[in-house]
Image (cartoon, rainbow over all chains, first blue to last red; front, side, top):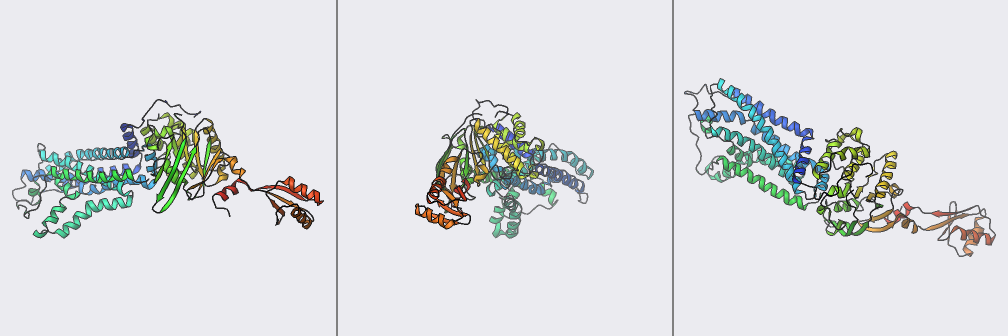
Length: 292
Length: 298
């Protein structure tokens, strides 16, 4: 090109993983929808956390709440917004990949990175990091406010409780993993509307519908155990605090039917990771095979 | 410009279900020339270009750049620059960000972004969102994406579509300049007249199959020759020409004699002593030859 800056001619294999990741980062940050979604995530986390913290009180309870119950109340107040935010990260996850197909951008992506898979993985990585940072920042801001507000309501949350912190980190990871799962669904379906419908169906509708069918009677225990393996309930397990029973029904131990699975937080995390791995495997196989 | 390659399409077939969009298509595109890739809408041009770029997998055959499939190129954007007909960008991004995305992944220096925007005349609009661009501006952005890596091969799908007259003039000289620098330039179009002034070679396909491959002038060689002739006494002229052994058809403006030069017709009339009022050679025109080739002549 006579008018152009000349390029070095010795570069081989220009495509580096770092370059592709940086490129995907520019993609993520150069769209307004990303910032809107991140803003919503942030506002919901902080806003709902503050609201919950200021309205949680056990002054009515004779003898007050046990310390472990207070810890669970502290966890609940901060992460209560997570149940809404799974909706936000589901939409974001689908949008980030499916919008490339709906706009035609995917052709530019695939001509730039013809092996395709590195681009998909880089995109999921920047989505995960972005979501993690935004939610972590929001949680970090909410925690001190929440503790102050709860103390005003007679609930003293102690910060030397490892379960408290584990639940905090768990809630952040939960949102990241749901975002990734939705991303994989978007990559498989290549449609914004279809992707959001399936992701929300899996995250919200499935546990609700199957939970209603399952009820609590003994014959449907297997169904309830199945429901426990759906993303939403795995997320509940991941973010659970051991004092939850004391907080949810103080003084009255929760009755659990025989044979019902109670998942440990690490099992919840493992289950969610498995969902992501399964969806990603399908997405990668299809990505290599399909015409764009 | 890094390396210049020949585009090689070898017996490529693409079937979508039972329909063969491209059927055993073979052709080559040489460096240093502008090659028009022509055919009516639905002939399989875009499918062929997508196979070339590794977006669509051929059912059979292979399409390469000097023997290397697009996906196996070490530096795709520096080797092949492509602008596809349909928009290949997100409307919510600016042109500058779009080019930055491509440049960053391919380790193309940032300076190229401004240089390319300047070259296609988009500098002024570089920070506006692409969604607000006119069709012509989108074409220019597509071209900028293709030129970003200063590639030796350019694959442009309908690049003239949507440009204003000034833009058409500009792109014609750009294509000529790019080929003049030794690059391989493949330009698709559904109208021969659109690219007639800028191409050296033509590849014409119809219904997924090759119907003509050669230089632009090879297209006019197949032109059917005819002569329009008329005289105040048309009946006498018709008799004279028939007597001389020509096949004559009556037309509104005179008589049409097919397959001869005007000189021969004039000589026959002169020999018969019939004064002429009209004598001229008719060329059917490239566009008609083209339409005839692709079977769309109406």
